Image 1 (cartoon, rainbow, N blue to C red):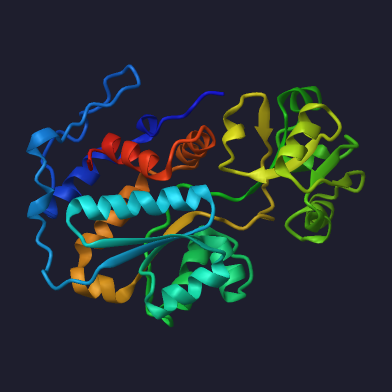
Image 2 (cartoon, rainbow, N blue to C red):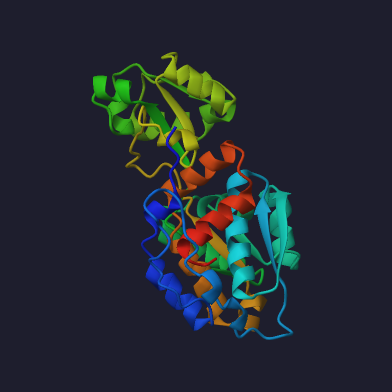
Amino acid sequence: MRRLRPSRLLAPFAVLALVLAACGGSDDDPNAGDTGDGETEDAAGEDADLDEVDIPEDGPTITVGSFDFPESTILAEIYATALEETGYPVERELNVGARELLLPELEEGGIDLVPEYVGSALIVGFGEDPPASVEEGVETLTAAFEELGVSVLEPTPAENQNVYVTTAEFAEANDVTSLGDLAGTGAILGGPPECENRDTCYAGLQELYGLDDLTFESIGEGSARLVALTEGNIQLTVLFSTDAVLADDSLVVLEEPEGMIPPENIIPVLRTEIIDAYGDDVVDLINTIGESLTTEVLIGFNGQANEGTAPDEIAREFLTELGVL
């Protein structure tokens, strides 16, 4: 399987360099580093001067937390390492657990920064209805978190949501590019047990897309669903949009034009007292790093994690290619 490297998707290089320079960081060429052969030169070298960041000596430690799955841990490591290298005092509370465990820690100040997911944060964290758009989700989430003393920063382009996947062979043979195109194909959807009655899964596909001839087969494990799909026992399955397997050209993610799946862009949330202590520089750093996080980049991260690369190693490679390290 092809491993996607973050260096292919680093358009905001120059912006990030400006942010770091404003913070007293590296003034190296922001475009340096990619040798073209897959290896990265450390553009900062001995000239990097991140120690000159103007940070109050009595500023609070920023505790970065994550959920208990690899993608979240990698993202938390990226933010934690970037803050650390820029001169902020940082602690890590990684693999805390589900949102039900992590959200109280954020509210009580045990954790200061978390890479959240727009739709899930609203639906699971606050019991809100699924947002129709990222903008709506951010607006509602901002109001919800404000009551907890937490600020919502800019959503990243990266999104990890449920996606419906078929094989390229089936899509081509049946002229299928969108979920609505499945009508009349007699396709079988393989999904986890809860999918059958969820409005964002099988029930929603029938109601919103009129897929009356779509049948459902309960398959709990994602790996088992993938095997069933590739062997032709099912023609459709549900995966996460950042699953590394989606880098394989033999699979096709179908379009979902009716908005059945809520947006799940990654969005950093940061305790407001940290912003009050350090000002806009800390916000700008976090937001600008987020601009380089895309769904394709996350697929690459997850692929590296599947190969056994540690989250901190993945984070440092990404930040090196951004010119932060």
